[in-house]
Length: 351
Image 1 (cartoon, rainbow, N blue to C red):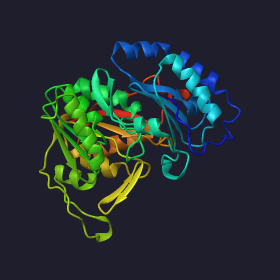
Image 2 (cartoon, rainbow, N blue to C red):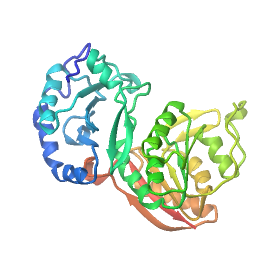
Image 3 (cartoon, rainbow, N blue to C red):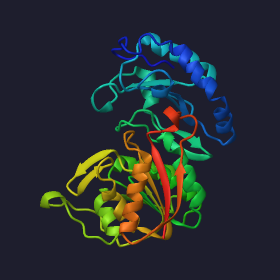
């Protein structure tokens, strides 16, 4: 299946790139990973990470039995799409969906024709380490329903959740929570503001028969976190607060904190560059003594050691100490410059 756009134009910076060659090179570099993925029942992964592999702003992923091509800086031409399709079909004769996200706010700008549009809007199922996840390559949001670079985080939660309680903050479609539940967690609380994302999360739980373990709380993260931590809920500049779900003070064995780069609500501001501690402190307070909080920061300009040092200071300032630190590094289908990936994930065991 091809996916022509309504107004494809020739890009500028990437116009001279031989997409056939750079994509073939990327696939060759991933042969060991593809064998690993097949062995571990994984059919969703990155095939081409353009920022590092020769075409800035172009990502190509496998999502189950489909290829997803996304451009974030420039619209791909029909010729470029044809080059990409020619290489991908040799790796798997799957439908190819192109989402042009080069316009403002990364919204999908291009139209698909008939059969291609119907397929892109249809629900499919893919697998990661044998865990089933729902996928839809176009929907009311803008991002895919599973972030593939977070695979290492889902693996960590799956491996460390047996018989534990889990809090999954900024849960999106609850991939982390689903992996924890499949790993044997006795309780998983997923918190996200989006009803659409939580609906996909419920579908993921049902696909894996763990819906009886999972809870889905539609809430701004600030009031949810502060209530769970036993702190008062406040607002920015004394603004009138809207209604929010009431939650009892609770601590968890495993807490997963994966906030967006920047977000603002009447309850507070999420700012991963200037104020990660504003979220980290209440999240830490919801972590049981001897429990683990997994922290994520996806801002490339944030240096990982400086970020870790700030987390350690926050822990110690609140009279607790870190007994174990473990960095979680992305899989090899997400190469990075000098092994310094923008996504930083660290697991802190706190006493």
